[in-house]
Image 1 (cartoon, one colour):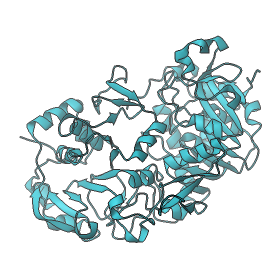
Image 2: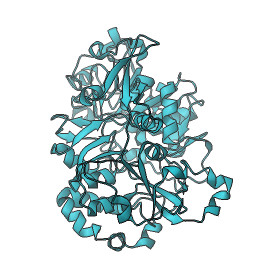
Image 3: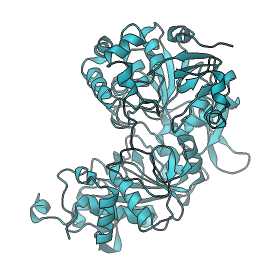
Image 4: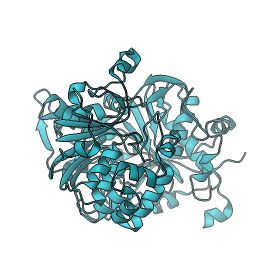
Length: 268
Length: 290
């Protein structure tokens, strides 16, 4: 059975919602959205998802090939103002792709370098990250695991709260914060190391621990029995074809690498 | 009461140094014809509050802006708006960078006449470090600290609705009215551009009356601008103009504001519309699919 790295990542990411119950899952970007959709069809059918516009759906829309929102499986209207009512209730789990993540699980999508008055590179702005991170579970999706993303110091602009004692608001403890998992092109991580340290949970087929550590700007904890990331099942791959009929997932990672590394890829 | 005025009459109430709220979201249902009228005016030193897209980009590029209160400026399918990016990276503008939800709370506080609304949002992040006017407060009911999100009270707000009557009863038939109701309620003076004018009887239908998100006494001016949201969308009438946005991005990145203005702005909305292919072309833009 052949599968791509993107499919491996999507299937791995779909598992992070398994024990969430009836939460709104928001996957920002095509692969995270596909992961949320897959989860809703397999590991957690109680999930709520939106049409990325203004309705909650009882079946996820396909991520490619959709011609119109007419006829979709609407469940309730949910404009953007009402999204915040849900966010602040805590009944949500977002899967997002930040530009930087630091050892505290803080993340950045706002700007890189320079100063606040004149950043070297203006990105999106903080968007909803501050409110999301203080309200509900958040996980990260990283297509390119590198020291540029997993930065050595703190993020250039801390947009989301993490497990950082120096920034912990008065009256808060780490148990009020829920940075759940990180799925990258190399591995799956969580924050269940000592004192909420980021920890390697599983390595993708053909990836070594050293490679993960070398591409991370800070020390990682390692789980006692480090596993290999579960490879996609035929059922999951069939569902991906249904949820992404035009195979847009093949165009998300550079050169669409195979899910099990070829020898030459491992060396390069 | 007849509130129908021209775009230039409507925006003439905006003076140097004012705070202007702009409705819509990114590339969706932005009052762009009103923004273009502002670009043609002499007004400057504005503080702009918005869920930003090309509105914020163009006003920054044209040098009309002193400060932007924002959570993002984005065109969605083009994540980074080029003109805003340039303005930020050159240090040309002041900003108050806050969370999307804080912006909502600020407008709601403004609408409700509260000086602030307490929230957890921003705690533990650089929002508090960078937006130095945000205060932390104690709660009388718990031991935690809270962010006091101050009221945002635009002097004037600009929004784009689908239809209105001359008295300022406005219908938003799009799937989402975003925070437009809050912009209108938080401001002292609201200007609403619409694609279509309708007689007051149009609203007798209860389904349509449910698409009216603020009362007519919150609307001070109505401007009839068919296609006036272009290049943003005015769902269900027309989608956003991806082709134009790409051209817009290239012109503003390479030639700056003057290149864009020379190519498109013109001295009136009708000359703008001829430059972008005409009203019919705008009205046949397909609706976005997400």
